[in-house]
Length: 94
Ligand SMILES: [Zn+2]
Ligand SMILES: [Zn+2]
Image 1 (cartoon, helix red, strand yellow):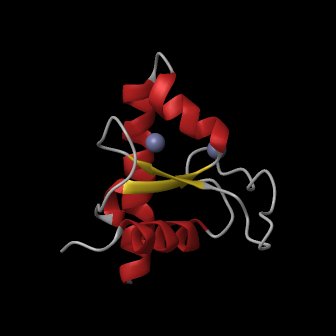
Image 2: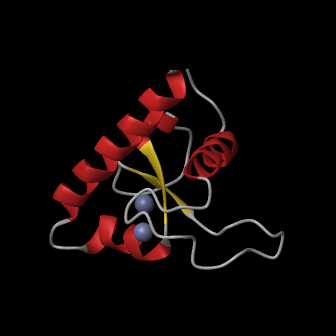
């Protein structure tokens, strides 16, 4: 199943509900359109963008996003993100 990246992004940000899926903190600010600002991160990729499965995309705050790409513990952190996304997706199916 492939969906356009924008749809995946919208889905993931709606799933996050304004709360970072990494640190569980609130989005740092609201956008000009009034939405909580979070970023879509592709857990299994080195770079973001393009179509992907929302089960492997996390909605996270800018801080967690930089961590997921650049931190010394990024492998472990991405594993944590994947676990949290798995839990959320499992809850949505119930
Ligand atoms: Zn965060
Ligand atoms: Zn990313």
